Length: 155
Image (cartoon, rainbow, N blue to C red; front, side, top):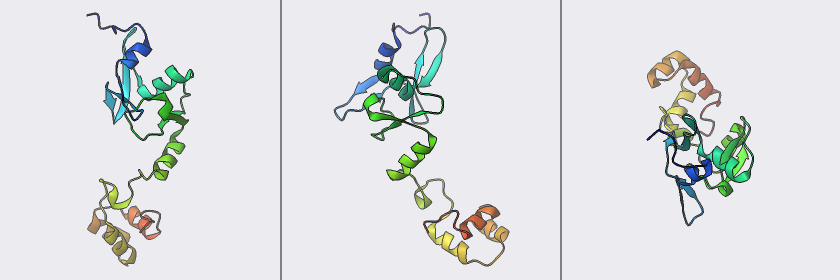
């Protein structure tokens, strides 16, 4: 095989990677990077693009600008149904994430080093920031931000 896609059009190649579900989601069966679908097409070399961005342009008829994103109404990262997508940017994506309760703050974040109890203890601790930081394995400036409620403000 020459390495070229057996599909004559991007749309056919795109649709070959989609399974349509009863809930309306079109789940991507192709490559996924960081949880999001990636479309690979070889018309004249290897081209990788976001499958959600490609879905938007194929079915909505317009390409997204470089600063625009295709965001999910359904909150299913592998969904490429153009009717489940809406146009946004990084800021609107973050606001959407918070509004839908998908923001992992505090102890819900798997990478967190502290607990709410430790944060309370840090706030009342009168030792130097560097000594406190050493005890908890965090940076001294993080201690300052916790004390000023710039971090862990919900506690």
